[in-house]
Length: 429
Image (cartoon, rainbow, N blue to C red; front, side):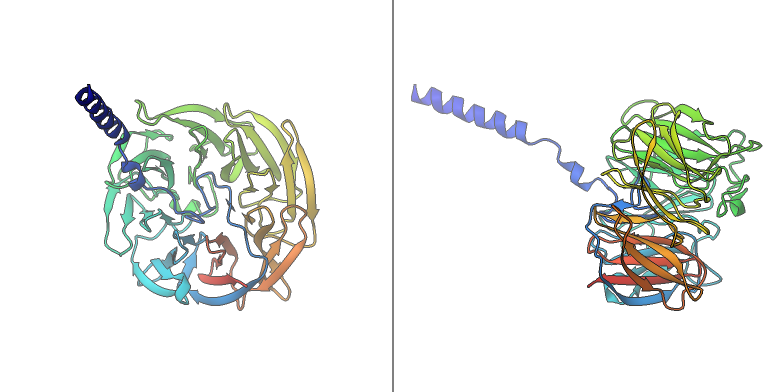
């Protein structure tokens, strides 16, 4: 009897051990670096991080890429590294700097120019993902290429879909999903624009920075992890205005991507990247009619629009708590709403400052934007997203051009970049 009990117990132990040894490879799946992995922060383009921002800052260092920048800085997992996509006359263009070492250059390499409106993307292992006309590439923490693959067009800022899958949408409307480790295409690419010449990856590229008609996709796509929806702004050749296209991602299935809807709900067209709500059910986007629009992510139908009285040129910022801060640009004002379902609810408005970038929200109590300041300078404005009141303001010494983004690291560091290639790094006090 005793032998039988011991045998049963041993068998149970073996079964339990085998059952507990599932596949644990998921920890190596690449995901976006926590913090500010790329332009607009996350795959939803929310310009939001859960890291509680610092209201008091001090400027630690500033330096130049010796060229131009068209997108904000990407910050690695621990904010120890910073990557920028410079457009330089000679020498390096893609640069990785040590943020906590006065911006010392870690490595750099020369890319084919023309895609300055896109930013690099960091994963949690500090690998980089970035494109150049006709090519998508990944770099390890050193400058040697991990993988490269041909694409049609210039890849916009890439986004992670989960499970180590990387979403790439080119400026010519080719949509691809890559295995981020091996660099191979998963499933079949989807073409949003018909009749593409696969040998001409620079067609219309000069229109992208200003979101003009010859550039079909001039902004990064938005992805909602909660629903698997992807939304892309698309200006079809010959069309009167840019529209939005909704794609459904079906992981592990065939087809991997399906086109669900095309929305012409905004007659004047859209401007800038779309932004998802935290639950993935609503898409927010600027209209070229000086209004902020909310669309149903399931079918692309308009839910509401709010007059801004200015043309927002950068995407809105959307926090999980519901605060929506309109985008920035010349003549813009700081304006905040919440979504009441079938209408916008104004929360506050400030006409005394001109935000020139999307507001970067860091937790519930701090947000950042760059404003024009007298005399003819730029300043980093720290404000409360709940009521808009100023918490602090810091001039950007000898700033030139216009600001292209405010990035917030996990260590609460704040990095500002300008179109003239200047980068400013602030530490929390």
